[in-house]
Amino acid sequence: MKILVTGGTGYIGSHTLVELVAAGYEAVVIDDLSNSQRESLTRVEEITGAKFPFYGGDVRDKVLLEKIFREHEIDAVIHFAGLKAVGESVTNPLRYYDVNVGSSVALLECMKDAGVRKIVFSSSATVYGDPEELPLRERSRAGVGLANPYGRTKWMIEEILCDLAFSDNSWKIIALRYFNPVGAHESGKIGEEPNGIPNNLFPYLVRVASGRLPKLRVFGGNYDTPDGSGVRDYLHVTDLARGHVSALDHLEKTVGMEIFNLGTGKGTSVLEAIHIFEKATGKKVPYEIAPRRPGDVASCYAEVSLAKEVLGWQATHSLEEACRDMWKFESRLTKNAEN
Ligand code: NAD
Ligand code: UFG
Image (cartoon, rainbow, N blue to C red; front, side, top):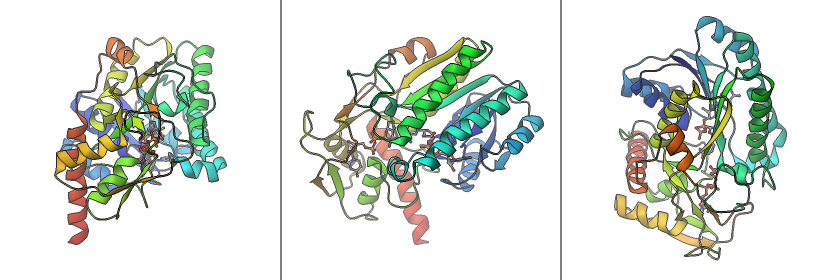
């Protein structure tokens, strides 16, 4: 089975390529390298021994997509490509609607023309907005009161996919709502390398631990949580990557569209996360309590039984393992920078 992976050189895409190869899938990659480097594919090729046809370009470019569908017999698509910086989506919403929604529509049109009707889409727990209940179930309220345009693009794309599935029952669609992916491949060869100063907790925390940044700011110390800091569901990126393989394996049985949470089901606070990282790596993380970050919710974690029952998937890695793997990746980066 040959899978077109959009955004395949990115953080989750590159880890998913590793797991696709392990599961016997072939993959073709398209990425415009707007938030990743070609080199990550070389590293995936080192890890797996496989080679991936690579198309450097934009998923909104339908001529390029048509060429890919002509040149390869694609069975299904995993659509990771998109922009994900929440703050930037607030200052530049049109770019987010254009890239995220526009690329999805262009991709679906080309898939339709090419007779490819199976897709796994990267959605996000952000579609739940301020949680109506915890843990969050797939049936929990979604799409209401979303705090930013990024989240709205994810919700809009889910709605588009739902309409598409309703219009033509030959489509087989799975939207995966990721909670908070963290970690790196156990080899330390691939991991998360955000451009500029990271927004997300773990990429920032790791850089503080390695001395690249001076201090972590804990956004909010007075939430209604056990220790006052924000609670999230952090899952190892390898588990998340394997979730895509389980989704692909299940697609054949999918009728219309299905939605699954991918998380661990366990909430961890920012202060606990710091402690777990320090214990797992032996590194200190200087921090201070800072004001709340606008748009943040107090707690967000998944109910994960649906993915377990239907996809046969569950997270198996601990946050300690994720911390050790992130540290391995960071150590390689800082060593390479010194040489
Ligand atoms: P990433 O930025 O590392 O990967 C996205 C990739 O898509 C990048 O390599 C980028 O260059 C590419 N890309 C962006 N726009 C493109 C376009 N128009 N055409 C071709 N390539 C394009 O991000 P990631 O963390 O790997 O996230 C992958 C997907 O998962 C995204 O859709 C993201 O919104 C979603 N997601 C991520 C998280 C998270 O915390 N990382 C959480 C929920 C959902
Ligand atoms: N945090 C800090 N200091 C930082 C960064 C984050 O205290 O420097 C806190 C946040 O306030 C929050 C927690 O760490 O309590 C996690 O924040 P992240 O930015 O790492 O993650 P979010 O849950 O805010 O959002 C992420 C992605 C979204 C995605 C969502 C759900 O950024 O795109 O997970 O998957 F939608």
